[in-house]
Length: 85
Image 1 (spheres, rainbow, N blue to C red):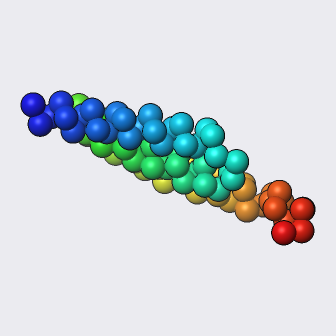
Image 2 (cartoon, helix red, strand yellow; image 1 turned 45 degrees about the horizontal axis):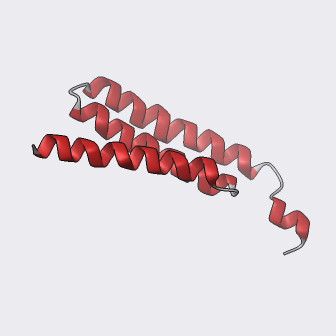
């Protein structure tokens, strides 16, 4: 019973963070939401008794991909800077 509730909450969190990442106009905030989604997905994999996949998802999905996205965003001009705000 508790397992199903925790799994449902994790799945709702995954869907919610993915939706927020896609609907956000700021790329940096969207990247943070993708990292959060990846961490929630990692927890889901761990609950499904796949710890090796959970570790790989946490390291690559949340860690490495987020770092690469942030570095790429940092090297581009932000839209707010072009407007002069």
